[in-house]
Length: 151
Image 1 (cartoon, helix red, strand yellow):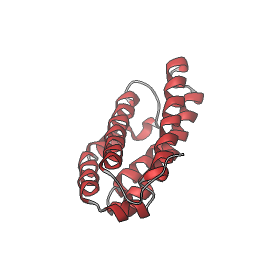
Image 2 (image 1 turned 90 degrees about the vertical axis):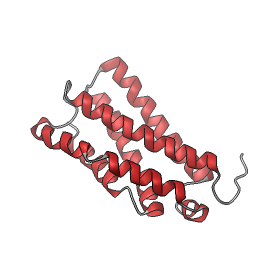
Image 3 (image 1 turned 30 degrees about the vertical axis):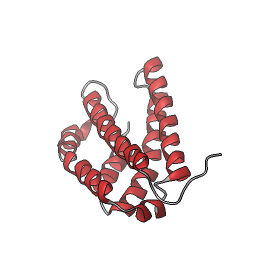
């Protein structure tokens, strides 16, 4: 078992920044795939695309605020040590399940189930990031909209 020091190190901030970057890329991928396959409800496809175009500034804001956040705030919100590793491991696990299902079955009901699990798991990370940085609520809301629109 690892021994975690109180606080955050630069590696943990890098992990969080990488996670945010990967989430932005993943959401973009989903929106682009939705143009070719029915992942999300198609009745409001244009609104979904328009909302996605508003998102880059929100991702940038959370990256900036994360970079200047102090150790204590991130630690208090479970964004260091074992708490961070658990959240990232869960996201990685559900990402793997989703990718495996997608490669085997395309966007079928089983794959969408795995995508739903992944989007739900992202909510915990978003909640903690919002609490720690006082930003990112638009990203969390977008994630919840994707969940609601999942066909």
